[in-house]
Every structure is written in structure tokens, then in C-alpha cells.
Length: 341
Image (cartoon, rainbow, N blue to C red; front, side, top):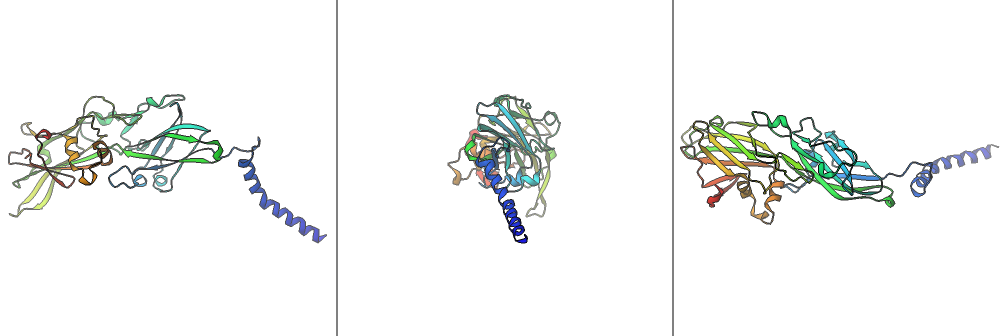
């Protein structure tokens, strides 16, 4: 009797070990009405390597994420968000989206779900809404402030050739490439003779029509907006040969996406009499920094990949810009084209 009990016990143990494997095989290998469906949908990876380093900076720069899913006809299906910067900073982070078999379009935004977001969605998609109604715009409270604002970073990404396949019996994996829409510009004014200049001696402005972007991240005309510096002041570059301290004026701007179809300007005037110190087409000067090693890169791609800029202007004794040379992101550029100024 004990012998048969041992055999029965061993058989029961073997069945218990095999049962989970058989159950798993049954649920995805065969179809049963009383079993839960197999995993089906998308597993999305997000990367931000559309920068001048050509390296993925998504984990370190994107702290919140909003993902919109549309069907193949561009009709709204669902929204997913992630607000955990800890999760997004993980190189292995993937967003799982449960979806039935079919073709889809995915649009992603980084920075919109963060508390410090500087942009808002034009509308919240409802069931069946068309993808063309999607878009973002700069917050009204920012546009109405009498001083400039350091904008919270905004990122955009899309992938339109997405398909959930029934036969895979698993999540279909795709990568969503992101790009950065916000820029930071630091402007420095230095008097060539060494006389000190202060940030409060000047009025600073960047003027552009780029406060709104549509579902494809194209800038939509809304009218020119004047970006004021979010910080300005006076800085020291050290001692001059005569022992006096060299002081320069600086201002720092934060603004939206730069596009070659627009004509943004950097305009600096003297507070004392309102006369121009610098009044230039901004994109033309920023494009001067593009290295010869990247000569095949188009201007728009370069503007989209770079997001942090520094311009240094040298002034004469009358605080007028000497239009001979300029320093752009540490590159000394000689200005030989009079049309630039």
C-alpha cells in the first residue's frame, strides 16, 4: 500500500509541474473560449539621438511622456502617459500598449505631462478625432508675462508604419525617434577696448513666429512673438593687462523650434537712446557654426539637432557691433557677407 501511495504522490507532483507549461501552451498555441487572450499590441522604445552627439539622450533628458495612438485612417484610439522620471531614465524602458490586430500611427511628446510644462495641447482627443487636430502651443501665461521664461524642454516623435500582427502572439516592438523643439540662446556683448558693459544697459529680444506646432511638428503661423531673456546681467572675464577687470553683458533666451521657413531676428538696443546695437537674421548666424565636417547636413537638420547656442558680439567704443567677426558656440566666424547684417 505504501508503495502505491509513493507512486501516486510522484505522479501528482509531475502533473503539477507540467500543468503550467501545458496551460501556457494552450492559451497561445490553441484557441479556447474560456482562456484569456494572448498578449497583443505594441511595445514601444523611445530614443533621442537626433542631436549633434548622435547619441541617445532620451533617458537623461525626457522626464515625462505622452503617447497618442491613431488607427491607419488617422482616427484617435487611445492615450498613454508616463510621469515617472525614474522609469524613463532606465535604458531598458518600454511602453506596452494593448491593441487589437491592425495598423496604427503613434505620436509622442516629451515634457507635456510634467508639472513645469511650458506648452499645452490644442485639444484633448475624443473617440474618432482626426490626427490633424493634434498640436501644441506655448502657454498663454508665459506669453503674457512681462519677463522671459526658461521653457521646459519639449520633445516630439512619430512613427506611422506600425502594425499589430495576430500571428506573432506577442507584442510587436517598434522604436519611436524623438527630436527636441526647444532652444536656449546665450548672447554676450563685449567692448573691444575693455570698458565694462552691463546687461541692464541694453534691451534684448528674439522675435519669431513659432509658438504653435501641428501634429507633424510643423510650425504654424500665429503672428510674431517677442521672447525676452529669462536671465541677464554682467559677468567678468578676468583681469586685463592693465589690471582692470573685463566685464561683459549677457542675456539668455529660451524659445521654440527654429525653422528655415521663418525669419527670426535677434534685436538688441541701447536703453539710453533706443539705437540698434545688434539687429540680425538669427538663423543665418546660427548656421555659421555648422562645422565643415557636417557640410552635407542641411540647415534645417542642423537647427533641429542643435539646441544650445552662444553668440558673442564685440562692440566699439560707441557700443555698436563691429560687423567683422562673431563667436558662435566657441567658433570664431569672420562675417564677409554684408547681407547677413
